[in-house]
Amino acid sequence: MKRLAKHVFEASRIAATASTTKLEFLRKLGADLATDYTKENYEEITEKFDVVYDAVGDSERALKAVNEGGKFLTILPPGTPPAIPFALTSDGAVLEKLKPYLENGKVKPILDSKSPFPFSHTLEAFTHLNTNRAIGTSTKNPF
Image (cartoon, rainbow, N blue to C red; front, side, top):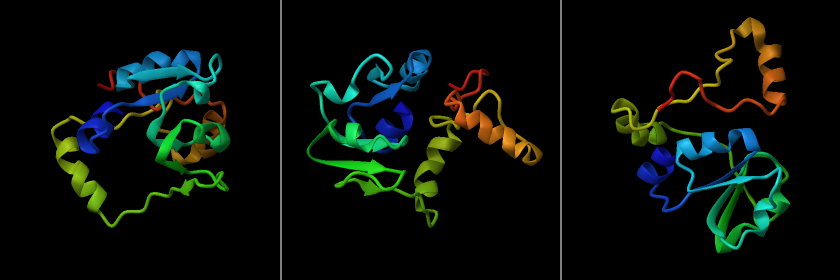
């Protein structure tokens, strides 16, 4: 998170939300502010952000964390206006920008400890995702 957001995309500060068990993981990834959404209303914190990215479909709450004039991206439609629908498509330019960071190890892919799932276990993979326990890392040192 930190390496990608700060070093590649020049973010100055990173905030992220997760449940209690995932907060330390967010900090290890470089979050400057890790908020437990099960205990705090992250949308009520006084600090607001230039870019907010909603990956869970909680647009109304996430929108409240955006600075005036900031951008709000969501991957889950319909998204509360003025949300910008976000779908990743690439002609290779994004990968070219990331290539030196991937090659020198500054940015590393993070895999869930239960992955990868073979194609024959697709149902099990989706079941795991639906538990909201997939954290996107391997227990084998992702850093």
